[in-house]
Length: 187
Image 1 (tube, one colour):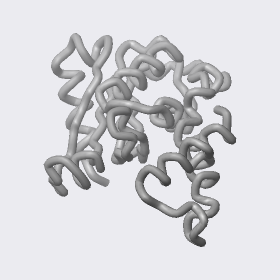
Image 2: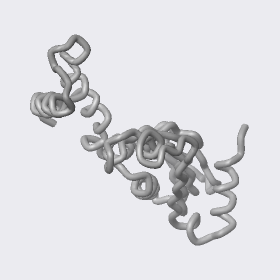
Image 3: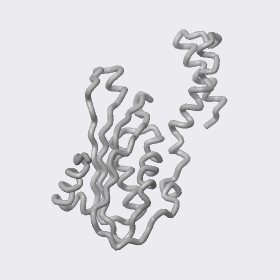
């Protein structure tokens, strides 16, 4: 990203909105917004394979592994407004497991891009499958979208739920049902 050019564009946008870029509160706003956008879209420079960083381990486990309630923050590609919520990722191993923190890093890798929740959910499922060759993978995401809460229909309590199920999570109703039940179970 060309930081200087983005700052110029943000300055132009603020001017078009009728703002005075010389007033105290806005003098450094173009630079701050450019820095924020670089951070919020850092996922474009991250490769999920590199994010995993070889943290894949041999295991005799063939049981379901679930990491629940991973915080998700992303930007809607339609309005550049945030959406946020929780992501639950589960898989059944075929002799390989992934470091637990790497699952959260995979989520962050794809969330830090301009997104739609449906695609984000599918990208996470595919990346976990590709990383460990799992027998099955399931991802459920529950998010609130500010583009729906602050503008448009202004529905404050709406939550969008998406899922992506691959392999045995897709093909076996009992496996899918177990995963869905465990993502709702509270400790």
